[in-house]
Image 1 (cartoon, rainbow, N blue to C red):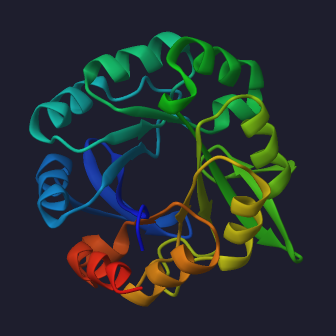
Image 2 (cartoon, rainbow, N blue to C red; image 1 turned 90 degrees about the vertical axis):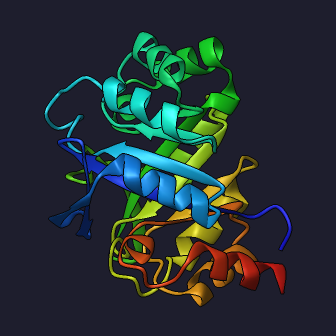
Length: 245
């Protein structure tokens, strides 16, 4: 399947890679630089680093770690968590990041998204959208998945597209860390509801999960975290399966 990308994601807490289930039950897994180099060698197309505590704790983004990562890997990587200003975003790009990812800050202040796009270009700006299914509706959540908003997934996706976002990182909180498959319904609704690329996230547990979401939803990329951290499948296996579709 030509053009579809495989992304490895590392959630960061206190400069260590961690992973939870449904955004809770966090466990420490290892050194982000060591893991980043491993995923690059395995064939990941891109990496994502997300500081999962920066927004809740009102911290600055992790500039020093990103500088170290930028010196060690050559594939594109994006950074999210705690970005509240254009200046912080610029500093992350100067530190080596290829793109920045924003979520809660642009829900609170949509004008920030406009400013980021104007200053950096849409190709440098990803909007991360965390969604949770409640009573058959996919709602957008902010603050690391702790606060429900009044936006549905498709509503907010269309709005960030109109504001200039170049890409959407869509994570199903219901599926996160469970390794039982992506949320195909909401991924399809969002990917078909906008014209910008959508990265599917949350729930990857097998090669089949990746091929299903990329073949049936319109997503341009699929992201894995636990599935790679715990060696359930290799990126090479996924790439081979996609090539055979």
